[in-house]
Length: 430
Image 1 (cartoon, rainbow, N blue to C red):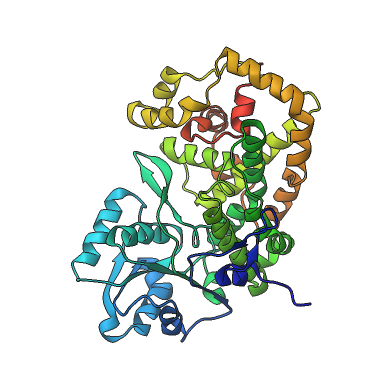
Image 2 (cartoon, one colour):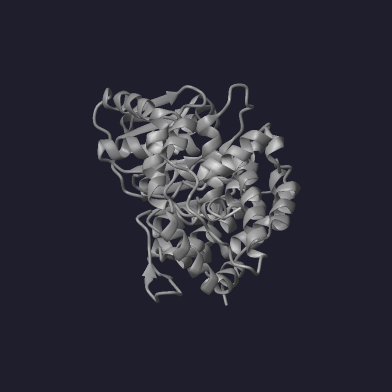
């Protein structure tokens, strides 16, 4: 019997959700993942039926790698404009304004084509949303899992937020291009994939403890490719195309999972809060690192924290939340502090709430541990896969001092309103 392909089934609208029995689909019209796509760029663009006038957006690096090739495939009136951003652009409101103005200057476009990875993809999602046109993507690095998601990661006042946009109508991945990306970007994609277990544990905790919505389908989508990816981590870093295909499929399916979950819940929880905290407060002189590198390290930190708590048979005993508004504003400053407080205030426990949740944990802890443990990947297994690829494994490897990590473990939970093991540990009585 042939093995089913969840990507193909989602595109066809026939993927079966084992929980609900419904058939699931996607607004994405085409996904191409092939050893090489050179010469077929126009064919894939035409396959999604988005008109005849295109803006192609890249930065100076991705233009050299693939952008010029995509533009050559659109010779003549189809190429309305080429926008080449400076190296390492920022996904923020100012850059979105600049990008939209550059596109509008050249007249009407039917579609925005992103040629790049995380930041370019996010910027083009927001520009396309503002211009009221679809967007498609030619990937240049397997560094993140947002290609097929409906969200964009945008920085506001230093705080990174997940903003609702729209999924691209097409995502096209040339494995030879992706395998030739800087090895750090390949390791970053592996790091972004390694947090599946920690994100699932946090999301399940919020579901089991607080009754928040939860879905298994994002993780079912990933299961087969994740099982093939981690044992091939060393080959992945060496440029092996079979290993690269499993990584790219994992990233694409993770994006679909976020869309089906109506948010980044299955892929971004406590580990991302820790990474975003460091980006928000970044001390002067801290070495730069890629988001996926940071996520791989913080996934290990979270896996250690989660594993230690899940190994305990005695249920946690909670007290009132020790962080208050004054502490949050003093730590983050008045602007970012107010944004964080708006996210955090609803999660805080007073005496009565702490007593009620402690009683709930006393009653349900064994069931919670069992349910989360069924899908939990222990830190040692994650560490082995990341180590095989040569990825950084500790905060110290990223140049993060111990005091910064301690502050992250205390304050990162204030950056987002999602309930995670950071909150459960942070509210424990000493």
